[in-house]
Amino acid sequence: MFDGRMDEVALIGPSSGGSSKTVNLDGARRMALKHIEAFVHTFLDPQAFSVAAASSAPAFLAQIAELARIQEAGHLRCSGAEIGRFVAMIRNPSSILRACAVFALLQFTIPGGRHAMHHACLLHNVGAARVLRAAAASATAPIEAKIFARIVLRNLEHHQLESSL
Image 1: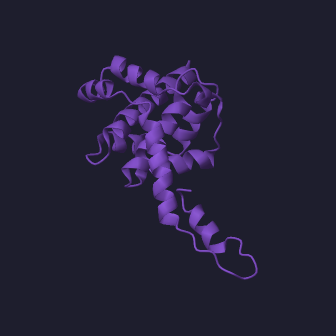
Image 2: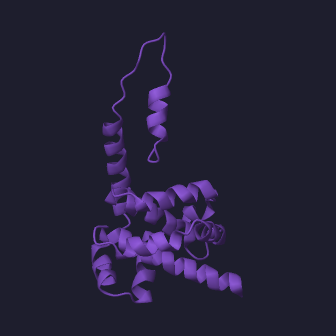
Protein backbone atom coordinates (compact mmCIF):
# COMPACT_ATOMS: atom_id res chain seq x y z
CA MET A 1 0.00 0.00 0.00
CA PHE A 2 2.72 2.47 0.93
CA ASP A 3 5.46 1.55 -1.50
CA GLY A 4 3.56 2.51 -4.67
CA ARG A 5 2.08 -0.83 -5.62
CA MET A 6 -1.41 0.41 -4.73
CA ASP A 7 -1.07 3.06 -7.47
CA GLU A 8 -0.15 0.38 -10.02
CA VAL A 9 -3.15 -1.75 -9.10
CA ALA A 10 -5.47 1.24 -9.39
CA LEU A 11 -4.11 2.11 -12.84
CA ILE A 12 -4.18 -1.44 -14.17
CA GLY A 13 -7.04 -2.66 -11.96
CA PRO A 14 -9.86 -4.79 -13.16
CA SER A 15 -12.49 -3.11 -15.24
CA SER A 16 -15.72 -4.75 -16.13
CA GLY A 17 -16.88 -4.35 -19.68
CA GLY A 18 -14.42 -1.60 -20.51
CA SER A 19 -15.80 0.81 -17.93
CA SER A 20 -13.24 2.56 -15.80
CA LYS A 21 -13.53 2.79 -12.06
CA THR A 22 -12.53 5.91 -10.18
CA VAL A 23 -10.62 5.16 -7.04
CA ASN A 24 -9.89 7.78 -4.45
CA LEU A 25 -6.41 6.59 -3.49
CA ASP A 26 -5.53 9.64 -1.44
CA GLY A 27 -8.63 9.23 0.71
CA ALA A 28 -7.96 5.52 1.17
CA ARG A 29 -4.35 6.21 2.13
CA ARG A 30 -5.32 8.90 4.63
CA MET A 31 -7.90 6.64 6.25
CA ALA A 32 -5.51 3.70 6.41
CA LEU A 33 -2.79 5.87 7.93
CA LYS A 34 -5.20 7.22 10.55
CA HIS A 35 -6.13 3.67 11.56
CA ILE A 36 -2.50 2.59 11.69
CA GLU A 37 -1.54 5.67 13.70
CA ALA A 38 -4.40 5.02 16.16
CA PHE A 39 -3.24 1.41 16.53
CA VAL A 40 0.36 2.44 17.24
CA HIS A 41 -0.81 5.07 19.74
CA THR A 42 -2.58 2.39 21.79
CA PHE A 43 0.91 1.19 22.77
CA LEU A 44 2.19 4.59 23.86
CA ASP A 45 2.43 5.87 27.40
CA PRO A 46 2.99 9.65 27.18
CA GLN A 47 4.70 9.83 30.57
CA ALA A 48 7.12 7.01 29.74
CA PHE A 49 7.92 8.65 26.38
CA SER A 50 8.66 12.02 27.95
CA VAL A 51 11.05 10.37 30.44
CA ALA A 52 12.70 8.30 27.68
CA ALA A 53 13.04 11.39 25.47
CA ALA A 54 14.96 13.16 28.23
CA SER A 55 17.21 10.19 28.98
CA SER A 56 18.97 7.52 26.98
CA ALA A 57 19.10 5.20 29.96
CA PRO A 58 18.62 1.58 28.90
CA ALA A 59 16.03 1.05 31.65
CA PHE A 60 13.71 3.65 30.13
CA LEU A 61 14.12 2.22 26.64
CA ALA A 62 13.42 -1.27 27.99
CA GLN A 63 10.24 0.03 29.65
CA ILE A 64 9.04 1.54 26.36
CA ALA A 65 9.88 -1.68 24.49
CA GLU A 66 7.89 -3.73 26.98
CA LEU A 67 4.88 -1.38 26.73
CA ALA A 68 5.01 -1.55 22.92
CA ARG A 69 5.59 -5.30 22.65
CA ILE A 70 3.05 -7.36 20.71
CA GLN A 71 3.72 -10.97 21.71
CA GLU A 72 2.41 -12.47 18.48
CA ALA A 73 4.75 -10.35 16.34
CA GLY A 74 7.66 -12.49 17.50
CA HIS A 75 6.26 -15.34 15.40
CA LEU A 76 6.28 -13.35 12.15
CA ARG A 77 9.12 -13.87 9.69
CA CYS A 78 9.78 -11.22 7.05
CA SER A 79 11.68 -11.53 3.80
CA GLY A 80 14.59 -9.30 2.89
CA ALA A 81 12.35 -7.36 0.51
CA GLU A 82 9.81 -6.71 3.25
CA ILE A 83 12.50 -5.48 5.64
CA GLY A 84 13.85 -3.30 2.83
CA ARG A 85 10.40 -1.71 2.41
CA PHE A 86 10.22 -0.96 6.15
CA VAL A 87 13.64 0.71 6.00
CA ALA A 88 12.54 2.73 2.95
CA MET A 89 9.45 3.83 4.90
CA ILE A 90 11.71 5.20 7.64
CA ARG A 91 13.20 7.53 5.02
CA ASN A 92 9.71 8.72 4.06
CA PRO A 93 9.00 12.31 5.11
CA SER A 94 5.58 11.26 6.43
CA SER A 95 5.92 11.15 10.20
CA ILE A 96 3.16 8.54 10.44
CA LEU A 97 4.88 6.16 8.02
CA ARG A 98 8.22 6.68 9.73
CA ALA A 99 6.79 5.93 13.19
CA CYS A 100 4.86 2.89 11.94
CA ALA A 101 7.88 1.41 10.17
CA VAL A 102 10.12 1.80 13.20
CA PHE A 103 7.36 0.40 15.43
CA ALA A 104 7.18 -2.69 13.19
CA LEU A 105 10.96 -3.14 13.24
CA LEU A 106 10.89 -2.86 17.03
CA GLN A 107 8.42 -5.77 17.09
CA PHE A 108 10.60 -7.88 14.80
CA THR A 109 13.83 -7.31 16.72
CA ILE A 110 12.80 -7.63 20.36
CA PRO A 111 15.21 -10.09 21.98
CA GLY A 112 13.59 -13.44 22.60
CA GLY A 113 11.41 -13.24 19.50
CA ARG A 114 11.35 -16.41 17.43
CA HIS A 115 12.81 -14.72 14.34
CA ALA A 116 14.50 -11.71 15.95
CA MET A 117 18.00 -12.82 14.94
CA HIS A 118 16.83 -13.42 11.36
CA HIS A 119 15.35 -9.90 11.21
CA ALA A 120 18.48 -8.39 12.75
CA CYS A 121 20.58 -10.05 10.01
CA LEU A 122 18.26 -8.73 7.30
CA LEU A 123 18.41 -5.24 8.79
CA HIS A 124 22.19 -5.43 8.84
CA ASN A 125 22.21 -6.55 5.18
CA VAL A 126 20.22 -3.48 4.06
CA GLY A 127 22.27 -1.03 6.14
CA ALA A 128 19.39 -0.14 8.41
CA ALA A 129 21.56 1.05 11.30
CA ARG A 130 22.51 4.21 9.39
CA VAL A 131 18.87 4.96 8.56
CA LEU A 132 17.79 4.25 12.14
CA ARG A 133 20.50 6.54 13.55
CA ALA A 134 19.33 9.30 11.21
CA ALA A 135 15.71 8.78 12.31
CA ALA A 136 16.72 8.83 15.99
CA ALA A 137 18.56 12.13 15.47
CA SER A 138 16.02 13.73 13.12
CA ALA A 139 14.66 17.12 14.12
CA THR A 140 11.44 16.47 12.22
CA ALA A 141 10.66 12.89 13.26
CA PRO A 142 7.97 12.37 15.89
CA ILE A 143 9.24 11.50 19.35
CA GLU A 144 7.82 7.98 19.01
CA ALA A 145 9.87 7.31 15.87
CA LYS A 146 13.02 8.64 17.55
CA ILE A 147 12.61 6.49 20.63
CA PHE A 148 11.56 3.38 18.68
CA ALA A 149 14.62 3.87 16.43
CA ARG A 150 16.89 3.99 19.50
CA ILE A 151 15.30 0.79 20.79
CA VAL A 152 15.73 -1.00 17.46
CA LEU A 153 19.38 0.09 17.37
CA ARG A 154 19.79 -1.29 20.90
CA ASN A 155 18.12 -4.54 19.80
CA LEU A 156 20.46 -4.81 16.80
CA GLU A 157 23.47 -4.34 19.08
CA HIS A 158 22.09 -7.05 21.38
CA HIS A 159 21.71 -9.48 18.47
CA GLN A 160 25.17 -8.62 17.14
CA LEU A 161 26.69 -9.45 20.52
CA GLU A 162 24.60 -12.62 20.72
CA SER A 163 25.75 -13.83 17.30
CA SER A 164 29.41 -13.25 18.13
CA LEU A 165 29.27 -15.49 21.21
